[in-house]
Length: 249
View 1 (cartoon, one colour):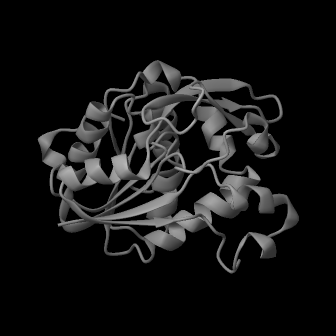
View 2 (spheres, rainbow, N blue to C red):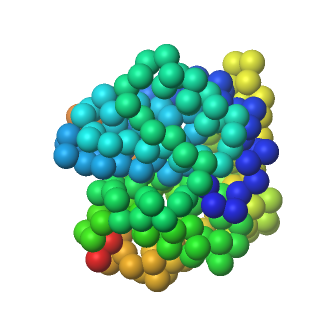
């Protein structure tokens, strides 16, 4: 995460790790992302804003040649590093985006990273920095706040969180959105920022990306919201996030 206050995340490692088992992540987000990633054995992957490194471990287990997890939140990264010390599956971790990483990766995965850009200038800087990590023709897969998310906070409460827009117009570019986690004994809140599809595409184009494909999350084998399990239908009709598959020139 670039220019993001790490204090929001330092104490959330255990919560973020547990969230991987929440139904909307376990049954929708994680399989949707991994299906989009596709075959990984020949890939060098940079997990940008890796958090507790759930995706880093999944990518390594799928056979990625190299996986580097990056996060500025010290608490998150310490958790991931301690787990790597025990399991020794071969993930590297860093808190700094040094020039040594430039043009070394086929894929950058940035899950829930771009929403923490609080200004359009910061968003452009984040996209540019991500672009520098990729080889020519490399991919960025990222998940922002869905441009058409449901602004009624209670809508997502059955899935363990609320999205509470601060602005009267919930679709204001650069508008703050409070992400409130509210499952079981967990209660936590962080700030994110809403950006429109046009603003994302403008920032990515400026960073050298030549294509941006948008895809709603959908579990493998499910044709649409109406054919999903009942407990997932409402989320799939109005997902809070969307997959962006971006290709560098």
